[in-house]
Length: 276
Image (cartoon, rainbow, N blue to C red; front, side, top):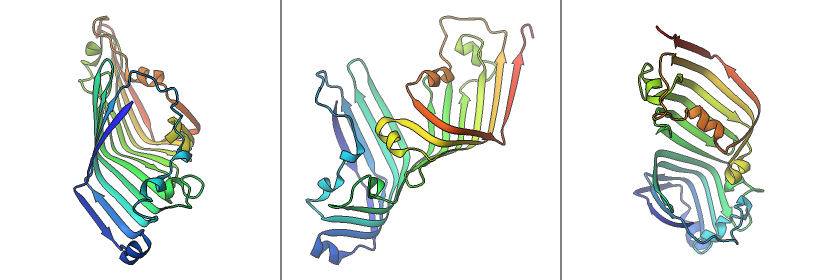
C-alpha cells in the first residue's frame, strides 16, 4: 500500500528550553512541550502489485534518531503532551473506499530521550519512561448498525503496561420492543454498562507489533447487563443481521488473559413469552 500524509499543528508551547544547548551542542532539551489541536490526515491507496520483499514490522528496527539527526544530536524532555488530536484516515481499495475519523485523542509522554546511544526497546521502551495514549468521549455505531458502542475514556499506558476503559457502554439504537423486529429474528436486545475495565500486565510489544492482547489480569468492575427478548417475533430472512457478539467471536483477534475477574456486577434478563 502507498501512503500520503498531511500534518497540521495550530499551536505549540514549550517551557524550560535550553537555548544554550540547542545553539552550541545541537541538543533539544526542554522541561515541557505541549502540541495542541494537531490534525493528521492519511490517505492509503491499495497497490495492485504485491511487494514480495516487504518485511514484517519489528519495533526494534525503528530508529527515530535517524529521522532527527540531521537537525539535532539529542532530544530530551521531561514531559511531552499531545492534546486533542484529530485523526482522519481515507482508504482507497480495489472494490470500496472507506473513511475513518477519530477526535479527542491525547498522548502524554514522560522521560523522553532520543540520541545515538538509546535503543527503542532495551534502554527505554519507545524512548520514554511512559507513554499514555487516551481517547476521550469515544462513540461508534457498530457494524450491525443496530447498536452503538461508547466509552468516556480509553487509555493505554506503556509504563504501567495497562489498558483502562471508563464508562463503557453498548446500547441498541432501537427501543427494546422493536429490536428483534428490526433484526429479523428473536434476539435479545442487550443494554450493557461497565463502570471500569482494567487490563493489566500486558505485553506491549506483542500488542503493537502483532495486535495480540496478552495480559495477566482482566478486571471488570460494576457491570450492569440488561437483556430483553420478545418471543413473538416472526423469522424474516430479508432482515437478518449478525449480532455484534457473533461479530466479536468471529473476529481474527488473539486474546490470552490468565485471570478474569468480574466484581460488583448484576445481570437482568426479561422475556416476553409467546402469546403475551
